[in-house]
Image (cartoon, each protein chain N blue to C red):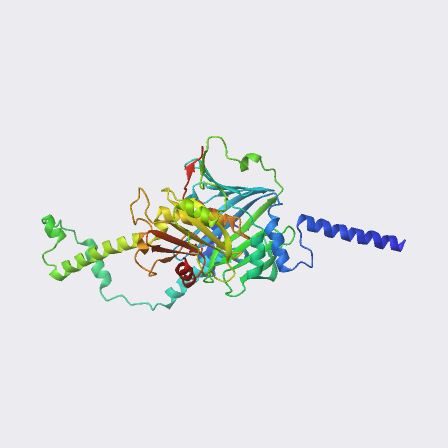
Length: 161
Length: 338
């Protein structure tokens, strides 16, 4: 069976049906034993379906001329303004500054909340998760390869004498 | 003459059946549960070098790795090929599991007992049916489906090799019915020469213990003395769960925890109990976020393995519950801890 890397390089061509018969058969054979690549294909097909569903839009008249004008017109160096005017332009309404301040406060509050609510980021939590996983190692039908991935994420313990 | 031929034929057939059962090959009359039991023990008899792929899916992300497996009776080594795991290897020798971290050159050893009774518990709580037979990596495999008798999930599908009983592929569906882990072989080399050194901790590696008394089962009183508070047991457990054992566990900051483990054969629930205060890390750090609330938003899906974690704080004690159960069930267990 071809490796997943090779198959995934061909997925886009497979999805739009431009692979030759032999290549197409190879990919289909691979799918029979590889759900990962099957999922990749489904994701690709879903994205394609979304794109297909979009209506093509007409560009506004004069768009290309204005782009061309923009490219060809030499740029002028802007006059240097004081740093506080660059940070807080005078033409911005007061409401905009109030909005900025509220957003900053919300962002800080969110960061604090997330760091307090997310057990996955805490070393102690990892210890308990690892302990839970370790004792499941010899349970009936335990998937040891998958458990190893989980146990491999961080190390805890004390040096032995 | 004819009678002698028949007798010889019958003897040959009996011998063939005996040999087949000895090497673990399925007998035609084996029930799905018997096939599963044989598959459970098959890997202990086999010698192989193989490549398998494993993937764990969660809401936030998926983690996958190719793994090189070297197995012979009594021991096994898994070498993870994913760059994210930085050369991690796991060794199993009997009940000892060793995690080799090449970055730190450390070997962490822990103990996980095999309890034959857990498989009987699995058969009591789960149904085993044979769905179909299909080829996988060119070998005929029976697809067995293990489903929770009442809830239907969690569930597991295993592809059992008809010739050797080795499990060639597994799919685990969590308590929400979603595919949570997937592992499958991509090639197998049978009976290769495997050096003993593959299953040893080599000179120069630092040995690390992750538990005080590996594998020791405590009684409630003894454990209460060790952790310096009365260990509480949940009055409620979901149907089919039974006590697996009480253990003593120290987290990395040195705080002693009681670890109560419950199993239903396929699934397990851990209840950790300890003082909230953690020397050197500050009060409230880590598990302080459940403080003052009798429930609230303190149950989370796990990112690295199937299941959820729920944290409760009652007075000076923290209760950490981990298991692949719906949030309502974990909450009911937590509410019943007395």
